[in-house]
Length: 148
Image 1 (cartoon, one colour):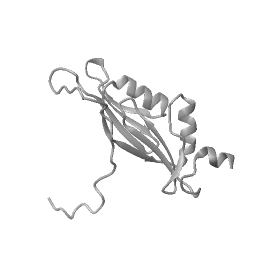
Image 2 (cartoon, rainbow, N blue to C red):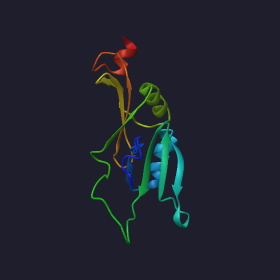
Image 3 (cartoon, rainbow, N blue to C red):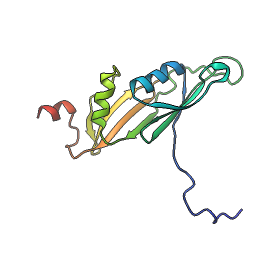
Image 4 (cartoon, helix red, strand yellow):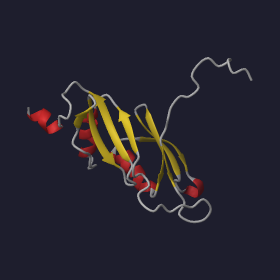
C-alpha cells in the first residue's frame, strides 16, 4: 500500500457514542425534546439497542448497555457525569427557546468566550451545550440582554 496515494483527509467526523441506561428515555429526550432525527438503528429481536441521531450537520450515537449476561454493565452512578458535548450552531438562543418550549430544562443562555451558551443535561447526566458566536459583552445573561 502506498501511503502517499491518498492525498485528502481520511477522518471525516467525530461522533460521540453515549452508553445509556434507558434508550427509550434517551431517544425521547433527543428526538422529541431536542429535535434530533434518528437516521440509523439496530434492533436485534425487535428491540432498539443502538441508534444514530442527527441534528443539522451534527450526530451522536446512543446504545443501551446490557444489564445482565454477556457484556453486561451496571454503572455505579450516572454514566454521563463529567462529559460535555458542545454543539456549535448558528443561533443557540433559538435552540434554547425551541427546547424549553418542548419542556426541556436548559440553563439561561449567557455569553462566554464570545459565544451564547445554553446547557442541558440528558437522562444519564451527559451535559449538552449549544453555542453560537456573538459580539454581546462577556458574562451577559439573556434576561439582561433582552431587558437592556
